[in-house]
Image (tube, rainbow, N blue to C red; front, top):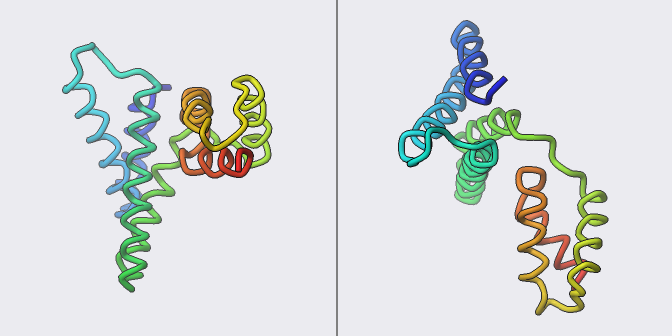
Length: 148
């Protein structure tokens, strides 16, 4: 089942359940996917592009929640976190930190990286290899730990 059909099915269920937070989240996904489809020159978007769109939506919600929390607006942060959780359900399963450390250690040995100067090479390979499977911040933190 494609992501769009999964979102549409979930959207219908959220409408029946009258779940406002889910509706907002699912409509945001639908809107972002439609926008990507219509703006691109090709006749569709790839699964990788769909994952990037979902990751961007989750990151936007988390960033907004962080800002609201810093400003003491927990009432605004809670819906953002809830929406991020709903959108994240459509992402592939994320790698555990231990699995990420092992995989990045393997990349470091392949590239021959020895110091923080080589972080760019490692991040480039890791970013491509773990697209959709791990958050960029998590990858960066592990690379810093292993190279630092």
